[in-house]
Image (tube, rainbow, N blue to C red; front, side, top):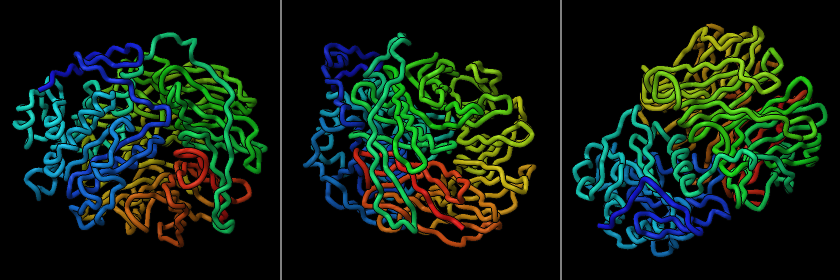
Length: 601
């Protein structure tokens, strides 16, 4: 066995020294490239993780022993991969993922058997590891890592069924499988169990593992703002369906939120750069979607914008997470730009672990309120984080909400009484692994009520929006009854958080996501989601119109040959719905940020 030290890495002239093994730092100049090795038969989690990688702007290539991999569930089709193992060049990838057959079914004695029988598979892992790539797997996949010589001295998570075999490779094999066992990072290795609970956290853990290969110092003077060039490309779809534009560079760019202003829009998201990897992107558009200016905000680490809103004076507030600033592994940040795009200030919130902001909205005091999650503080593994920042960048208050397991906040909206409605997920005393989570707080962040809605496995609210009648609408995804699939799920609740109706839409693929919603003046509801009606590899934007009782009136898919994602919807004064997200069917790079103007009633 090769002895590999997974604790400390030293960067020397572009090389990583790992206990005597010299590994080059991966070439991430073309964006993050992910290789997913599929065991036969493959399972639904293949697409769950692929979708998380796409949302981060990463490009995914699938490979297997044979060109077509059979499915292990009636929910899947047989899958034609991009490459067989013989065609893989390991040095082309920054991340290698091993996807075993799901152990839930227990239909095969060795869920990675065909990969373990392939000398090419172990060669790929060995070569990729030596090149400095991050290696991820779940459950039984650690056995293939052992065959490749990567477990000796390593700390990994493993399902109980495979613990004894794992230990024969010299690793410290820790049994996972519950909601308190977060993904484990040990240098270049990332492992997890119960992948259905942790998809977003697994992707974040892989990103943090890559951070270890690019050390960030404490010199905050490297954090700043610069002009950037963004190309606007029209999206070729019928104008009676939508009018769309993609915005991007030669690398990956993603859109997260868009804010209407008096004479146009402000688009925020992430842009990839060869030197600094993920940077905040802010693009000012006119009313016809022409670029007026574009800014890149960056430090030596990863800086990712998740949300934005406009202040009373036209200032632009942006929230997200950063490894360039702050106290811990990652911190939540809020920054303020003036209307011309000049950076006024940046504030971070966090501790010594992982903390992030996922949404931001105006506060009654002229500043902003922010929600996200924290691993640094609170009662549980992670907790919902909510805080308010004034117009000068001072944190006025901070609240941590949650129990002994996992909570996260995905959405925040202001209410007429000065408080806020929050949406997200919770696994504390939940019906399943994770439940949809709605929390109403007052103007100081104190909880008025909190409610959970879910079934057996996984339910998450991507957004919670106030309605004209005083109630709220939760939009996300959740279990289909008697199935491992997830359906786009919409729940209306009254002002006290009691469910009035639930609608699930899940006829197209294994995982269908609800991302955001807007209510029209007529009381109809437009839902922005993600689905696919052709095969199970590429996503399309899914728009649904519901009546006030949750019944579907119409729906349509929008997309090309690649993947499309919607992250946010906004209702414009002219009655259009504005959708923002990302596409790799159109535009300049791997992914481009995308906005669509969608006619309604």
